[in-house]
Image (cartoon, rainbow, N blue to C red):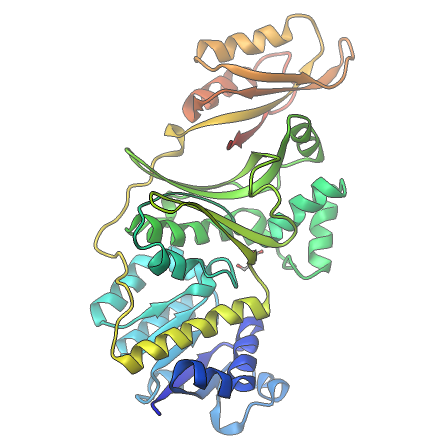
Length: 427
Ligand code: HSE
């Protein structure tokens, strides 16, 4: 039986899960793969990880170079995270003629062109199922299962932390701060939650999905992102009254004038299939020209689901190596143009903080009308003559630049007393 030698670099949360599966299920994996998966190295800077995981002395190393310079290693699993060291390790592994498995979405989004092109140029494979959607097999689905389709759109909930926070705000009427604290207590949110709540984590992931869906490299810097820190309990309540829920969506669409790729808090109709993807779950809705709509749902994070995806990649790779075959080619030969956010079209939720006085609504609507923006729905929650009240308008489809131009004018009106809240609507 062919032996495939593996070097596992990084024994943090996911690395620990991978180590456990590879050791606990060795026989099971061997039967599935038709090859013996030998964990040749388990590498971590922290010596304490050896004792904690009871790793045999002969396979534990602290320096990744030990793994990279060993010509007998076939597959390097990079689970260090972060950009700098991980980038060096992956590029070195590829140059040393090793195949790579990684979960590192930040690196693949920000340095994707360099890494994917290096892999293709050197004829090595790079597998990254765990980089998006944790245990959900979205990468293989796009690379293989939907190969007969032109993908036209992806609407996705791919950050479990934000989804948990918004779900608790919606169902338990918690404030953003209370829901964030609860997410941290439950281990969903990091002590420093910035990467998640700013939308950056979801932006990394949609960059990778858009590359596979639309078959070209996507410049991460062109993907726009907006997080959930500005969403208030009031917005969630008003959205409900209009029949919507608020979710952080990562969206990628193919249009005639380039692709759209963005992360944004979004009003979704309560009956939308993604509206009930709650708590820390992820949901990815794809539209293919042949298959139509297809939803993938599951655990988008956590040690075991993510380790499950890493080990599935190892099995796939081991099978390919054993059979002398290659994976579907990565789309590195062209770069996609991402449409500027100002050129997108959407419906909008606008929450004004306005004085309750005759004529205010008509002043606001006349500014919108001058930009050709049509209103589809209005609510004013309270009646407090002369006092400040929330006034909520939903618009029909409009271009983003027209909305921005109107808001610049509207926010200057004396009757508008705070910056207007703007949230896009997807129907
Ligand atoms: N922090 C991510 C999330 C999981 O909350 O979904 C890792 O990608």
